[in-house]
Length: 309
Image 1: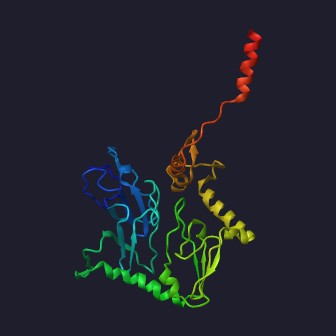
Image 2: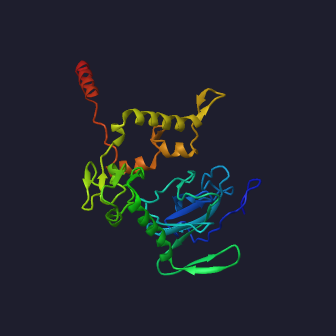
Image 3: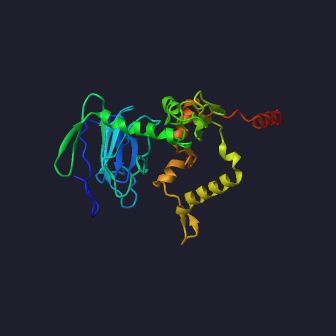
């Protein structure tokens, strides 16, 4: 069926009618990486298959699910921890096939991701343990985790949020009722304010105080207020970004198109736009404007015609 590599095994099989059966394919790995890719990107007749996800060392695929915009996805770990999120573009942006995805869940100790499922509020989640015990639980059960977050917020003096999605509004992580549960004098530093903020009550460019005394710092471009630290951090980020692409033997940089970091940051190649987001932005803006006719050429042409006369 497939020309598998030595030691390679099939992890998931999906039964689909065609590549329009759903909008996206969501993949989840043992180490908690999650990615969403348009299902149409997998439409190929190559016998050797195509790259579906760029797995990191010692990681492996544990789930592949068909989802549509707004479907709820439930991640469950071996130790019984869970995370439910809506697969909107704000929460999980679409990515190319060869990318590694984003961190969907953090684990404690030796815990790891066991499954990813698409759920709704009308049915039940059926859980089976290693010992053979089975139990059905309504999806509302997993809302308890959100309640745990609400329980911890009132105990915090300061919260810093940094969640950003390139080219998209920042995801809302702290709701109005969560802020109302916090104690007087607590501070929320919303570093995603420029993109709308991670807090529902953030006002970009302003520092505000709620009725219950919670200070929400929505100032934009906070790094400019920490010039030395921000410069050092930015320099380190640049070094960590380019150093894996440096070939020590050749003494030069080698950028591979199928590398996840290259694929996500490459804008133009061979005179053409290679980045989907840039292309989409230009399309939404009406495309690139045509350059006006060169006046110098017109004048030169007029002079030549006079000489000919």
